[in-house]
Image (cartoon, rainbow, N blue to C red; front, top):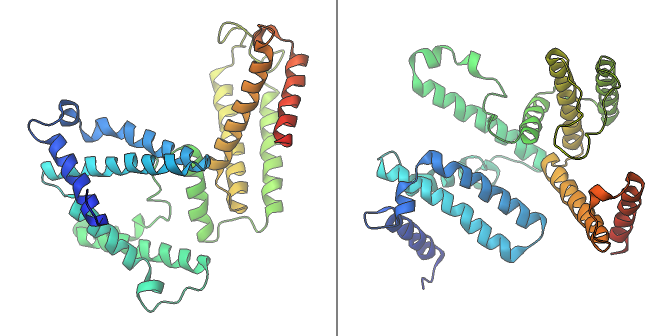
Length: 301
């Protein structure tokens, strides 16, 4: 077995190279950048789940799976002659040094807020240099391309995208002066949604009927559906901003609530299973009683 971290890393790179080489693994050799993307997303969420569960043994394995994605992309890029893992590591190291002048240079940064301001300024300068290096039309239109929101990716989960967009805007002063303003905005958006619901077909929104999915749903005019979607989106955006204002990650907060809901509901199912029933055979009153019991079980742990 290798002794140093460098030797361990090189062994992993060599294994990836062998898997993709002639005579290697047929599945690995068939993969492309596009075919690997879903696995990258899946492995990322498995890393997050291990962290949420504080399962450190599992996390070490999941981080290895995530690193495999990096090695896979780098190996495919090397084969097509665009870059290799060496360029990936060099760019990472250079970026870490360049964006931490308060550690590797003479710049002062006493607080994390100072660090974030320096980080954003350095990123903006890097982007400017890339555009200038492009020359011609790119350099001429440089000022028009300097949106603070330009490099927020659209492929990330919507909650995270909302968090990043509002954070970038807040860095340049576009933010609520205090959290009370956010709650006022939440009330405003809630009222706007309620106003749109006045046009909802009679008898109004109702829980979906048990049984066949979609049965009993009222037919909503497409124009109204789009307006309701807009209002719900606005409401969610305000909630994301409340989380940001409180320095909370909305994605993590919602994942924790999802897990909490799952645990409580499965506890209810266990109680009903003792009488050979499922939730569909229980009344709403019984389900609500079991739900409260599930919450009490959590408090007693």
